[in-house]
Image (cartoon, rainbow, N blue to C red; front, side, top):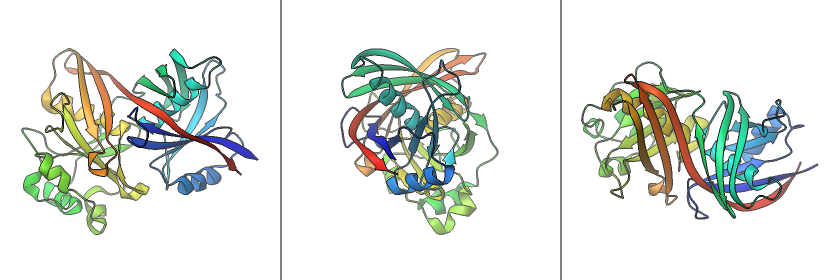
Length: 297
């Protein structure tokens, strides 16, 4: 049977920038095997499959797949799907909407503002970042990333591991010049990262008004490099609070990613700190619909 789908570019309002996302609607009858095969066919960082929500007050249930495996949660699929589903609400074109997505980590409530073919979504992270063990020594990480060990670390930041539903290894990089040189060395990846993706970040940015520049490599998931990683940005909040010790209150950051791929992505990260610990993490970004079609499956 034909199944509608849309392609969106996420973390941008400009088509053909940001992080591409496929969203397959009318997916209730698809098997897990079929979803994984369709995600491999699209071959984007993630593909979303939308089904009716279990709770009638929620908007939809979604499942998220990389080309190689299912994820319990991801940021750019949440932002893009929220914008798409808000655009399909009766009479929707401009203005605000609330979209509640049932993901494997739980219900995620998204606030959406529509501006025609694009929109902006914010959501509270369903899980706060949790420390998840120790990272490999920076000498091992450097080999897997094609870097010199001296490129890894800045100020008091050292490599860490944080879990937001699945885990990333967070690798602080000295500067823009060093982060631009990074590339995944598959022969050394297992020793350095196991099955985990690597999220690289530096304080040096292309634009002064932004706070961090990042890259993400996930070769085990079939993601050579990701243009914009929402779950990674949420996990980064754990590292930032650990090393920067932000005072109680609200703190906002703008993260740039995808510039080395000519797919610039802008992610908005917001944290609330209480009693010197993370109390809430929010992620926001733009998304634009660039294509619609049908799967004849």
